[in-house]
Image 1 (cartoon, rainbow, N blue to C red):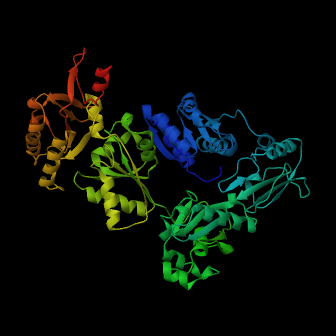
Image 2: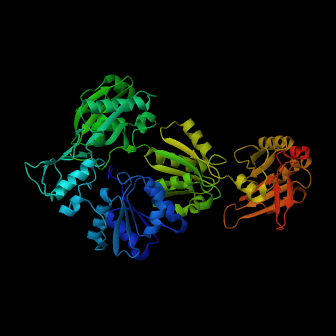
Length: 584
């Protein structure tokens, strides 16, 4: 595998404890998927490059992953076990991780490993050349070099190994062998007689001016690697000061970019080659690029490339004595504000489904987290009661500052009467450097219109009747303007235990602007098992059937209701096509 990623163990229920046993055996993250969530869980893990171990039936796994297969060199390893755990089959990525995973399961659990394919080196010596430990990568694996090299092994050739490669110790070796294997972080070109394993021992420290392009930073790193004959594949981590956590040119380098505080960089500054008082005055530490590289590479690392410069960027490279498997520093925090629509899995967008699965932490009103429980895969939940919106958003921001991937969960759409605006208001008042993304969902007014027919076929607006944050005088002014403008109006937060008369007052304003037969949609618990959508005439509307889980949508003067042959009533607002149709 090109980089070390924790395996995902996906089970359909914990049958006889099989998924739990697998999780312990491979030190994997356990996900117990249910029903229709099995396929999304498999696809999300595969697309994120995670090794997969599952006791889900192989045909289901194959059909789920088939659309995303690229090549045997790039696809992550996938291992399938029988439902009861008796048999273990490496299914995909056999040459770069699946065989190792299957062998680990066989050794730790005593289950029978089924081998239906393999490489020449595997059958020759039990040591597959194309399977290397985490932190090493076979550089000329994609070429014909590997196939020819393996054929030579089958023909009885021995090898000379340069570097520390204990996983290859069973290969036949000779000091004067024609075949060679080199383990290095240098940029070497292999051949069909020379395999090159790159060791991921390098940490690249980066600094740049605000607004530097990612192209400039990448070009500087590429040039520095070329000038010192270092392999890009040997880079285990990129690093910088935490002041650059929101700098696209640095965050965009890799998912393995890590950040350090000025104090953390000052702890290694005695090892840097080019300290600068000017830099210290600016950011609180005399070195960014060199100190970041050393901090990321660890206490036993050495600076192999001092600070190199372009017009607006700097970089330096440190080398660790062995592959860097555990990254130091803090990942760039991200806050994903997601709208889950009405709440059912079917009404969430695929993007939101992926993001809540990908998140490390969920923050939200307890009911909203319950609604996405089908997607739970080990996330830490942070539950807040209704009304604690500011505390909820502040907590989500703080988690993201710690380097977590946070999903702030909102019902409906994240930016419509939800948390997105409050998050931006908070970071406007108290700036921070976390990444923030807003991902939309189906809002209640959209769902209500669709369930009723097509009420928002023409101009519409949404008005919240809650006066907790907005004075009633302002709300009343908006209702009057919407009434006179003849908008279809969706009333959010129409009633509560304490607020009982706002809805009646709103209807009193509308009374002079709407015919008595204007359709009114009353939609309760949209998208949930208790869903109840009904259509009333304006003159017959009774506010007593409305609560805080209800949206009330009042049509314009042009809105109509019809009863179809199935006996059901539907409502719609015409766009104006009648004039065209009547003119024909």
